[in-house]
Length: 102
Image: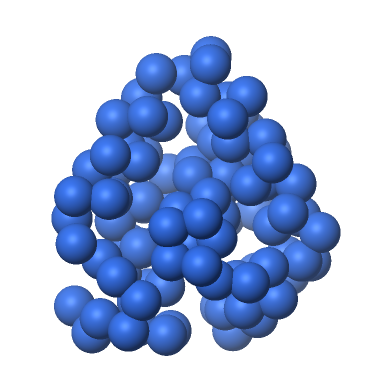
């Protein structure tokens, strides 16, 4: 699973131009993280604990409730940033699926 999550992480960083592992509260970074959480949670059916544990591996202390909040807020962020919808579609068509090693 970690390889799949890493593929998604790299793709989100590439699409958004933001390193989501970097500790910052900028709007662009918050929205990019939310996209990452949403895609893993909704599209790949990853649990909040799995996502949190993955980020901990990369020294990013993200609590599972932060992941839940990011997933919940994604649809609100989409209303104000149309790029998020396009980026989500890109991730969905990129073919990154659970268990893939790409």
